[in-house]
Image (cartoon, rainbow, N blue to C red):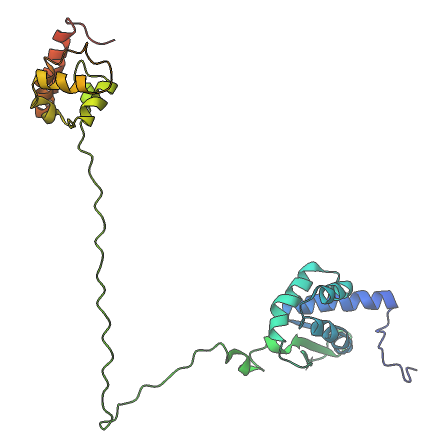
Amino acid sequence: MRHGDKLNNLGRKSAHRKALMKNLTCQLIEHKRITTTLAKAKSLRVYAEPIITRSKSDTMNNRRVAFSYLQDKEAVKELFGVIGDKVANRPGGYTRIVKLPRRLGDAADMAMIELVDFNTLYNPKADKATATKKTRRGRAKASAPKTEAPKAEAKTEETPAVEAVDTTDDLTKIEGIGPKSAEALQAAGIHTFADLAAKTAEEVKSLLEAAEGNFKMLDPTTWAQQAQLAADGKWDELNALQDELKGGKAEA
């Protein structure tokens, strides 16, 4: 006889009963609703609700106490994350037991135990906080004066900056002009083949002599002619002229 015995042993030893309650609590936390026998559901409610109360205060001590009962890291994470936010304002009574038809075979009393805050069918007020309020538009009254909304200041659209196009020609394509001499000519204001073609040999030589570097051995006599062919796009004639300047020998 169980006179005065408030704990239902469920026909198990102490260690077996604790393991059963631990597993059922972890499943309830994970799935929010489980089906079991009525006797197990009533015992689970007594075992799980004090642990759920711990989730209201997310502290290291409460997490360690909950883990000592559950022995499941994922269940503790779910308990102090999603469930803790839901039950924060509920003063107890986190679970609901719903009786189900008897089980076929042994005619055991069955029941479903669930977390109250995760059932939108029995608790329709749960989603009202997140639902958007719908307003019904009506006809404006004739007597109500119309107030004009202040005009927004016109925003001036800034035109995107146009990137500068590089129009500098490769002056090293002219026979006799190397990279350093090309830099010296560009520093003197000669950037294109047309600019070079407009200069005489004496003007080019004076510009090179004024620049820093050893350009005294350069002969700019044919540079204007080559630059004019390059500016006109006559590359075949330019190559023929450069072959003549090299003594008829092509570059290696």
